[in-house]
Image (cartoon, rainbow, N blue to C red; front, side, top):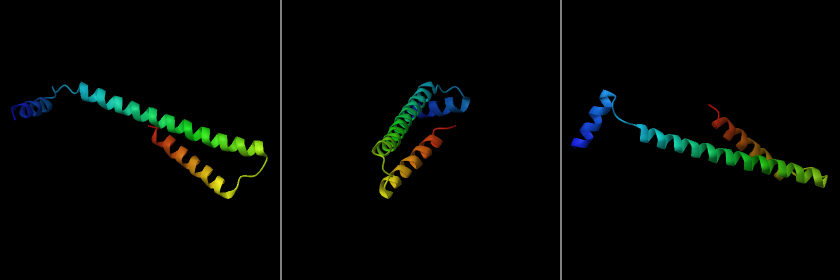
Length: 85
């Protein structure tokens, strides 16, 4: 109980050392950013790959494939927006 009271008092005085917590939060944010960037790359590669496949085949994209492509684009745009400050 004494440790908790000391921590509370230090926080109230503004002398509580939060550097370890801040470093942990920054590391978590960096992991999130890295994961988001990886997801963006995969989605972009999938979209471009699908476009290249149909362009190479010289046939129009069917409705189901076009819907999947649209969903990937929507997901890409959503992830990209989440990553912007």
